Length: 331
Image (cartoon, rainbow, N blue to C red; front, side, top):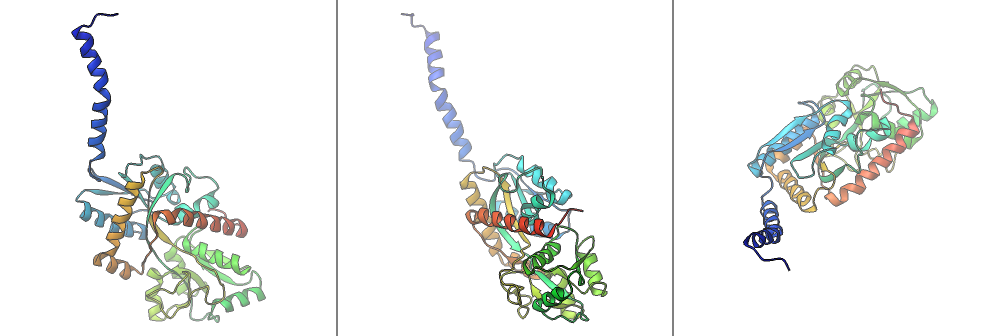
């Protein structure tokens, strides 16, 4: 038997108390309020665009609610891949968030084939924010008045009808591609480098019809320079209550959503997801945010974090079918 000395007793006490100290340190850390330091929100587009405007609307609400800095980090380029990859590699502690538009999660993979992130496995869905309704608009000289008439004309002359579209992979391009896929029609596409050039071509009568979105097209619809034929959403939209949905006007089951949501890195704790989700809900209920969304033509879009995963998967599956069937290739 070894002799007991003060040195051995001291060593024994230090070793035996180590777990207690670790537990106490963990407890103090766990009790720290969130957020206790600045939060970074990555946005996959340059400043000034629709995603940036909506993301900063949420960011301002978070700053007011938390009294903590929320720093916007615009990482445009590569169709959102740069920002998405950065978030996917971040620690899931709530201090790196991702405010993104739908295409980064639902059309990028089938369009490009390989991404530096997995849109389903590398993120934790937190909350939906809003969607911007797509609208099928025509030049006043275009004879067709409904989607059913467009389909009839296209079937009568396969490949002979022309339509406009914004850049490959944009919401307007995806929406017209979905229409062609579901209707089983072939039309000649004239693509432009963005929503604005596409709209200018439409206003000038260079193309007869195209999908746009309510924010950009509404002033021209109200002035009579464009005719609204149908909206791409499942329900009619507040700004255009008399305009039917595509589903109502000849293509049942059609829905093309341009939505915006808050995501986080994978494996974030459920408690933190709930806290962030509730924060987004509260911000969307404020009068200032409601007014701003309405003025932009954006519609609040609610969905729980648990509902988001299967929804995003279904959207990815849908656009994968469309992109493969129509044969869409990236520019």
